[in-house]
Length: 242
Image 1 (cartoon, rainbow, N blue to C red):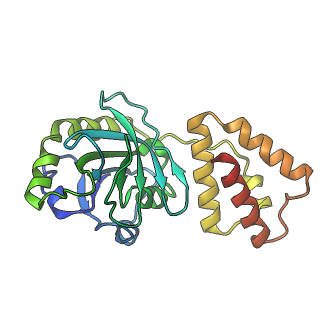
Image 2: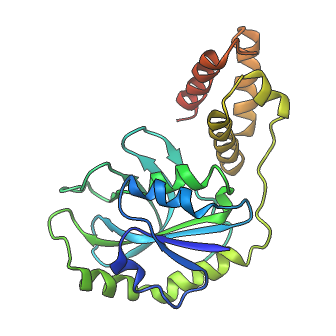
């Protein structure tokens, strides 16, 4: 199943004819609650479409990196197809951005969507497409937003079709099950480690992660004594990979 997630109803109204189910998540943190209600399965696909702040008003981008301004975490949708769309990074802010930096994009939900869906589906089953609607100081009307998204509908449809045509979602697991056990992780933390595993596989950093785990064992940090020390190990891995 393909779920097309949008934050606003005026965005969703331009996407009615696309394959899949269009879901209005709401902006910011509300998206997390909505995604939880969907009940994603491992073989589902997610396409997030929406507006963002930046330069070049009206231009659309396929997102290849998402940065959370709140946590500093980075997410990497694994784009295995060539749609011809221009690719760019988006930074998710906890509040409306009123001033944009040179060549930067900003929104309020991409990292929240990534954090939620990548616990269930692999990065190859996620695509994000953003259309620049404003530079932080000239926010458009609802009708203007609908028109902007509709202006990119052919490209969005192409991305949706290429995303689901990949077939069975690819698995990126390369860590042994024992790694998860020796870190004494909660289920939530296990999902976080799986997310890290996906990222390292996509970005070619498998050996870095394996060497880091080997070093932690030599230093006595692994096996972790309890969930608290497991959390500390996981945070150290995050810090190293940033």
